[in-house]
Image 1 (cartoon, helix red, strand yellow):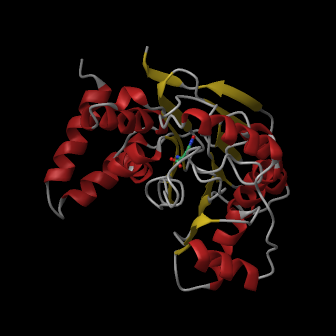
Image 2: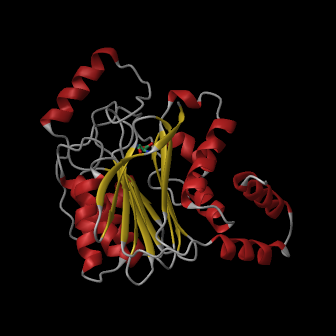
Image 3: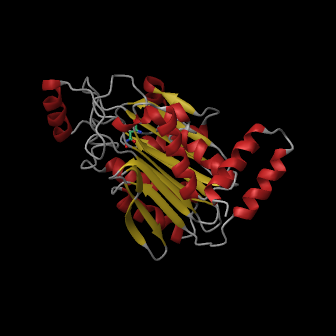
Length: 327
Ligand code: SD4
């Protein structure tokens, strides 16, 4: 019997190698593989701070709100929580003591907005949304992003809490700059939602790697890396060591694999395998992907044990351990 994964892999490879004529084949394959189950609305997000975030998002969706509003409202919860030390207010600073934030958002039309290296604004996701809604651009960075936020009514605040400052001062004693595998040091919230209209949107927001070099920007605000949605197919988002995701354009890859017939789970696994194949020292880092397709099927996969994600529907609200490659 032909193994389905191998068959799909082979088919995807041959699609990639062929020319225009292959697009109808890809469509056929996607149509055949499209799962029948429909369970809308659905919200999926990374890590345990996804639980309260999903609650805020599903509230929007249960009231027949749009996925784009749900993901923005959802990720604002950890952004504002000083006890979540990897996102927004209370996030760990960079090695020079600055809390610098990255975020992006994408709607069902493929519109997107992003801010990178933003300081002093508690809700970078809402600034990213405003970049999407009010400017002809996709990304604003650093001082320009801050200027835009202030001009649009956001307040400048000190985001470095005493707890994060204390941790940073402790880190400075050794200044050991190494990736830490799970929750201690980096944990972005990435969220994908499918609304009752069948539309998919996503959001991603982070303070990035703790004690990163000043000016370092990760995958989280990069459309295609930290987040990608295509309303014809589905959405995907990443967490973990951003450099590995950027090198393989992870979220775009997951969506394209789904377009070519893979389930969200298979696509997340294949994107992690891409990292395993291409990046020699991948074992030093954690990477996690989440994905959703138009039928509301979800998937998640990571490199190391320890990545959990929140999955919420109208009648379920669960924290689930993702399967992992390194056993
Ligand atoms: C980054 N991807 O800045 C982010 C960090 C993260 O879970 O997601 N941690 O590289």
